Length: 487
Image (cartoon, rainbow, N blue to C red; front, top):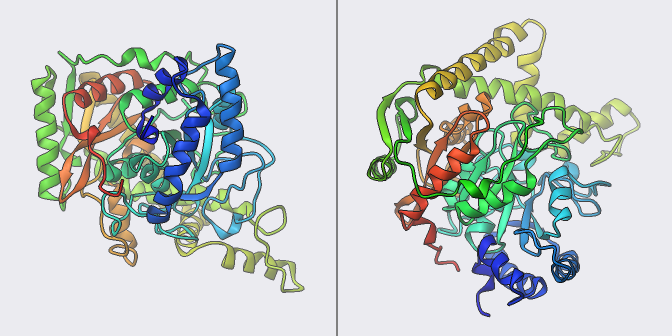
């Protein structure tokens, strides 16, 4: 069969289960497409061909024995901040350039338990700090729709790979929009689950109270199938919630009649591209046509403080989490000195990139004596206010709908020297992480040949409602079927 790399998870599963193709055939086809396409978009930190073919052979044996989960034998790319035993995990940082974990992250264990196939590790912004993948210490990933544009970040490599059919699906992590914003920029589906729904064990920490792992997929059905495998309680991550995991694929029904949808006006921000605003308005009108009850004038008043609060909370946690990289235990170590203290200082100076150092300094300042109450404590209080806004909204609405980003993908280098403008790329996604609620980004149109992302937000553990809403919209629109010309 031709173009096997273009398949979705559910299409691949049907063929594998019926033994019309093998995982070895599928994996070989994906790798054959991945290698030349990656030379154009630079989505992968490394391609794991040898391990992938061995995993595919094991998957075929499992299928022959009647064990065929929807992810069995299906090739994936994993963001390079999730530990993979025996395979380098760099976080796209020189600090961890040669770090080989001795264990797998929980989500990797879950994928391995169903004989999934990993074909590569995805490039990212260093330690997941960025919105464009330009902060990778090694190279910038390019947007498959327009290679002179960014793919978003920090999961830019994962999103670009899915968009370019360089894998069937990918995993990313989301601390302030790092799954949803690149999904929007690359025209794919990206889901940030409720905080505590997916274990963070083995995810290299950025901001521990905000980080969450989730899927990047070609359609909503695939996102549901991935969640069925990776969600659930893990005793090694005390923040995971011991709730039963539903079969998310059962939520995929094209029916949102009577669904209460709110459009928060604070997310239609000043500076939004007019064409993006039109795409979002058209999408909301489509929801009305499909039977949803839409309120176009909802207010989440504390949203305006979200950006400021996030850039105190996240850097503060980062400054604590990244203190472990001292050149002693693992990772890069500066050795050209006789002083231990100078060695530690030089290790951080040379091992971390500019954006990581900027955030460490912001966080250290916010946590320092004399400033803790003025900055960090106040940001925590704002966090409570933002969460209360969402709680009140979800008493009236089932789903909130917003743009994923106020613009489409921007040119590589356009915002590299202006951190504040770069941070504004995530203005529509940050509050969701602060509140810990789930959200999904799906394709909703194009502006100047670049995808527009539509974001649905739900109350805690309402992924089923989000998936049903996204699926209904997806099935009624053509956007998810579009493919970039780079293919």
